[in-house]
Length: 387
Length: 105
Image (tube, rainbow over all chains, first blue to last red; front, side, top):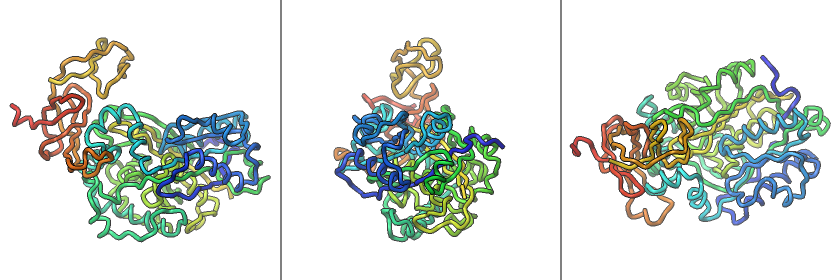
């Protein structure tokens, strides 16, 4: 077991409460996130010398233009392009920057706006492959790509809609104690099964609701966090991979499977040591693949894993404990930060909703950028409570 | 036959459109005839669209096929077919249609 990130810690998890629609630009959401990490840490914004930004709707502005908007003079900036994996990939870069001395404190922020026609325009400009090879077929966007993946996964491994429903229901139960979740009503299995079809086999409660919002956290040396009196988590291990298994006919596995062994070896712990897990959940099937590819069960056996575990906060496998995107809403790239922010809260005993008792180890995994037929980016981090 | 890009250096067939061959990094890609023979690898029935012009055409049957020549292509389908079916792909401007191979031959 190594200690790859030494004394680098993650702290000051913040969320800017989501709204369904916003007429503000994403600059507003990211700026509010910056204000919140400053308030949470007691730092002034010009004391933060590294800025990492993840956003789909920031264009034509960039992380650099934001330094002028926000009155910062950082000596390190980074812009994440990994969407649903950006909570982890931002952490990896920021941790190395601080560890190597290129910055002392990095604010990692993710946020997006969502105007009334915002999601349509996001889809229209998402990628050249999406525009050329998916949108001409009825403009179904990622629902179509994930419907194809979900259908092939169900056929290959025998997972049922009820299995996906169990995750959606557990997450909704978790969301009921999380103040910022947009979905505030309990969800029952009958309601899940009877929901209207979006793109078979996906129905309404398999899909996230686009919204506006932001998430963020700070990366710094442990000694700094202690001086500021901030609870923090340590980084035990991380992995990242893009365009894995390019020749698979349909995506039944993610790139996490390529690197999971190394992740556990680096952390020096095993899946059964994880007290709380946050997967990227734009659709339930992708959470199933993360369970499998990270080694919680064998390939194709997530359905049994799901049937055998209780994913609520008080259950034997606390998962997506703030409700995940399925119950909080998907605030664009902030969806890639939701699990990271919630993991930091759970591991520092500062959950906004129900607290997982005595959580020591957390796993955050991300998955992003459904370019055409596959999600291209994936990443995972194992975190340890600093208490 | 359908028209797709073929790498003139290593013969890899590409879709969607590429500027550089992902197998050998050649930039010598030419649009040439490729057989539409394919296998259906997944399918869906789409019920919602972000575009108004599609709303009266829903639901749409769509299939993802793997061409014998290599690439995967999303296409309109006419009937629900099981995964693994042998199908034929025909081109209609920017889009593709799936034809049941048995009906086609």
